[in-house]
Image (cartoon, rainbow, N blue to C red):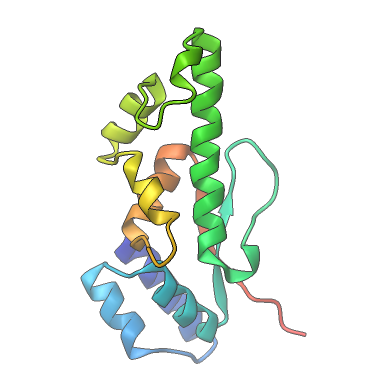
Length: 152
């Protein structure tokens, strides 16, 4: 799913509950949104982004905290990469920041990304775009959906 489709899905879900926002419509038309702005708008509409790990049960929305979702996906990538490096016996690669792994070359470059994205996303004040988030999700095998915020 691309970012425009994902945004349009939120617009449709919110419309069913009589909610809309002009900025959300603008984001959908451009297909671009920063995760922090989108998370705030989605919360106003009564929704959060939720992810499903490829190797776990359940959906995670982290209380609407987009940074936690990004961290979960990035660390999932790094953990799988560490496992691959250990299995290949190239233990000297584990301590390198710019390291070579089959996972990195096969997965990331295939999806037009670089692991340096992760480092920048995890810095204070850096916000990935929705499209980058969805690309990483697709590359890592995560499912992404809108989750209704429970009402009390």
